[in-house]
Length: 140
Image (spheres, rainbow, N blue to C red):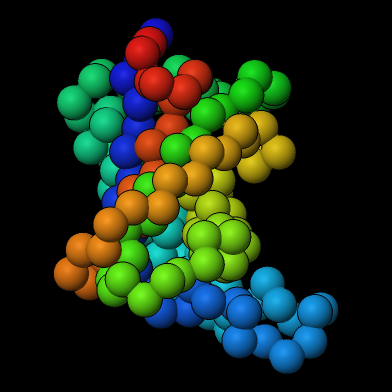
């Protein structure tokens, strides 16, 4: 078994879809393509670092042609840029494009995700840390 994969994303100001006036647009931030490409790029780098450190892919990643269906446990830590009362469910909704970018980089389908969200204290600039493994607690 392998250790978890950790991906650290910068805080994206668009993580507030609550500003939309219509329900159909509520999950849209207007930055989906950019957010997805950014998350894919950061994940590609994290994966490259992981392979260099651990000698291979995380155990939940499928090799080309491998159709694994096991669950991937995803812990999302939101470290907000301010203490202004962020709505964690809106942030999760707006994070969809980033999670799609993570999936693009890893070659996995997000329907395998079991997600745990952890809102945390504010840090300067904010950040989002995504930790992925084969179970929560990430004891492999």
